[in-house]
Image (cartoon, rainbow, N blue to C red; front, side, top):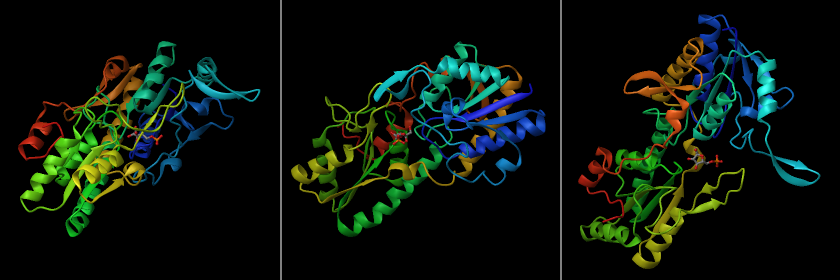
Length: 361
Ligand code: F6P
């Protein structure tokens, strides 16, 4: 193994720089390899100046930094790239061009750090002969092949901190505070931030809710003399029999962007429940900033393990946390089904036992 390359794709997550640093250090110090950085996801293979040499100097001091020194693109699918031809927007397949560029660089392995979308592209390139090794990242924690993705713990802590802050002002003003949280179709952030922050209601995509049940829960609190309530609401949560709420509709290339359910719940609680309600959308504050110790350590272990996996020729696979061990799993298997909150699992049962409502009672 002589030549490696690394790219980061999809939405950023705290810990990407820790992976890059671990990959570069392990590749150079442990295996004496050359390592190239690819800018802005797979787009770097198409752009002039998109590939550059990474050395130890390039990764000095980046461990605690959020973002990614490589840049990322969450719309950079080489199999369906949006381009303008004669003033018209068209979708084109650039995968062959990328495969040719990878061949001409004589790469022994391409380390792809990404969420499910980016790892699916990696899997498809692997089927076309590209020697890829995957590293799972996402704040959503929705990749089934690994117990945890890095980035999730940092996002969760940001969400918990927001709930703590909302608590004091909610109590002072006797208000209902709704915190809308990221996670796409998975409710891990809202569920565990709700547990860790002591929310009164948790709404997640896996458990469709009824507005009336939330009103009943808040009224029960008022009847007990508690005049404030905190709702931890996943952006993908939806009322029973209704669709999720989107801020932006998608198309052939762009995935739709969830957002707005917090306001819908607030409208109902204000109009039908008579509660003074405020909404906070935590948004990209969950993705920015310095990674937690857990995410830094996990990302570092994933980075070093990815280089070892490449050395063993473990292509078409990704590194994964299973229990306390970093192991690996085929991309095919890891991506076969998405990871979702187990509605009968102990976290949900615990929340219910503590009196937290999921809006389904
Ligand atoms: O997948 C990570 C994530 O932050 C989701 O939780 C969220 O729905 C989405 O990305 C937001 O995407 P964008 O950065 O394009 O707004």
